[in-house]
Length: 173
Image 1 (tube, rainbow, N blue to C red):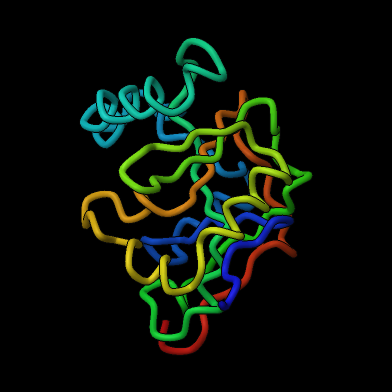
Image 2 (cartoon, rainbow, N blue to C red):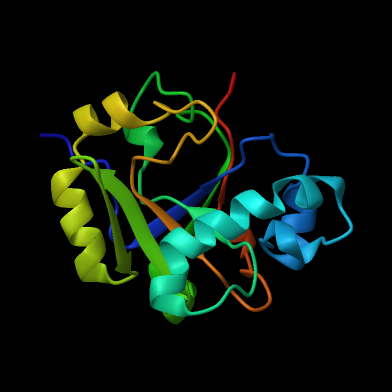
């Protein structure tokens, strides 16, 4: 069984390309709610509040912001996958505010929600083989990471990003 989930690093894949990278490096990864006047936030606010209510509120309390999303899945270990060649930000687990984060995924029809700990990531990594990730990633095209392990981080002021954490897209990605 090929291990594809990391327990020491989380990834934020740049789904829209590298255009936002300069802003990310200067301001960090910010939740969409940090831009309350944006049309995108106004359109998706109910969705993000719903996710927070389901995933974070039981562990973290009332809504503060929409969150920044990461995954422990190393798609560079999955050749041919949609994210295999995408630019990503590889954030060391220790750089995230664990007290403001949750690990979540769906397993056997049940939503698993756990505090972000090394132990919780180790449990997810033991379950989520390459074959399972391939079968469940993007099963819901509107929410690619809905079933597979993802980490929602709800920082007060975003997640600072070090330039050395950026892993550029491979040629053709």
